[in-house]
Length: 204
Image 1 (cartoon, rainbow, N blue to C red):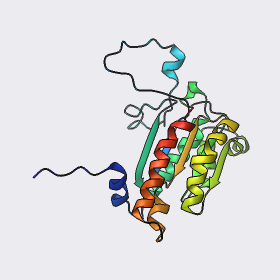
Image 2 (image 1 turned 180 degrees about the vertical axis):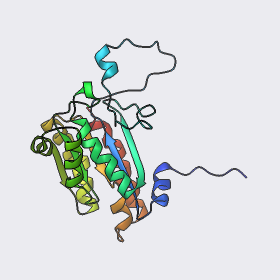
Image 3 (image 1 turned 90 degrees about the vertical axis):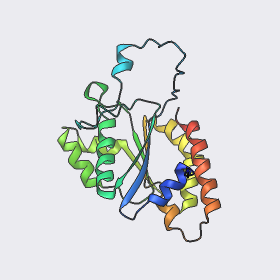
């Protein structure tokens, strides 16, 4: 018997575990997927090399992140947080060194899980100035699902423009949906739909 395919959002919610985190990473600037029937466009050498790398041999060859793209990260809490913290620091690096040369990095910490000490550790590893790096990583926290929704839908576009960032990270995006006993399924679907629709507005 053919199994009915469930929506991705619902599947993510069902697969969530207390020790798993699901985070979203947005690289700001519009980008569209080319049609298979269009001719390939020409790019400058700078555009080809302008991609965010992680300095991890098993990841960089398969994950080709450029400005205007989105990636979701799902895994154990510890490993996801390590991955995101490395991402914060590397996005500040020059394009020559595998970064985005982003003036600022914006992270919305929806799970209250930011690790400043790990960030300092990566900063030292890359030989960067600790004070300068910490001043360029903008962290904001939300404590209710409605605060998070308001921040992402209404405030984030202005924050991206104000700080001229090339990277936005929303950590533990689904945690509040699962931990709020008063949030029903229909309301959760509406908020998640608004997140999805609004994403196109601030990646610019």
